Image (cartoon, rainbow, N blue to C red; front, side):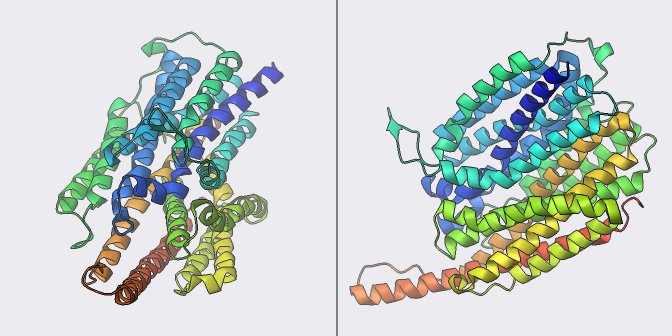
Length: 497
């Protein structure tokens, strides 16, 4: 029995890892995807839905599909999610336009987001209360491993040479999504033999699902993302529809909170839990998620645009942060045992804020400051990593053991929500700043002038664009430093030791 449980845990962790990898895999190749879709480098705001579409589907599906597995069984739902994940991957790989890429990534997100709570529910089925936290920690480690490996994994796969077959491109960034098809098939076979079959239960036996709460949460997040997405940031931070749509999102979010307080069936049952410290902890996870994804996207952009590096080389620059992240997580776990959740979380976020403040002072000539970049990325990565263990420990400490699976999922949901809203909001400001800084520039053309004059004008234009990008990126890192300071202030209200 113990061996069968370990095999089931290994398979469940593998499918969670597969979904987590794809949450971050496009960070490395976002510029390559934008180029193939005809999106110019000065209009990268049009590529952000490739990231936010996945995250929106991931967060929206996570609370609901885990509940459906209570009714229809873990194994059938995992099979359905893996099939949808493969379909979304194929759509993304075949995409020739922005809409199809975003649709494919959103389907991937819905399928991937469901795999984490279903796997945690499976652990609740197979493990007793005393042993369950260790198994939940293993699944959480698979989720975190995906965030660390995803960008580099994508960069390595994107090195595969162009390989058109019957007019279908299999190489380059397309390979990242084609490879998901055999991986999903292999995972489905492993699930079939490793996950025990369970009879489908009736709605009464399985418990009711808070479909209204899930729909309200998804609608609120969707409205906020749409309100923050500005396809033409030349004139304003927000699009013309931004303010009313964001207001509608906030209103729906308030209705969601009202519903969760009064509904007999809830996405996260807080009965018997001290709500203030728990919500403060989830708020810290939210803000940490925002800082994490802003780093992953815009350090990659910085390396590719200002340093002129290829996707994988740029991912290796980001790798300094990604390597420091798990090191900080391990260190945070050790320090938490001695100093408590709150103290380590506050310290970690202050270290992260210092790291981002240093990143905001990077010079325009980054090629001469590579060691400085590396050191600052390590500081930021260690700071963010320090937060991971104490936040998870604090949530588990203030919730009953019967709710540990749901509480662990809530930490991930909060972080993913932070990624979703954070990247939408911070990039909206950043892309507006870039457009405002370059609005007066005229693109030189090689007509009516001699070659030397054109080359001189092109070099001057390129230098001004580079300077505008530098201002955009460094200001966004400064905003991220303030996000970490806000998180440190919120962490003061986390549970006492």
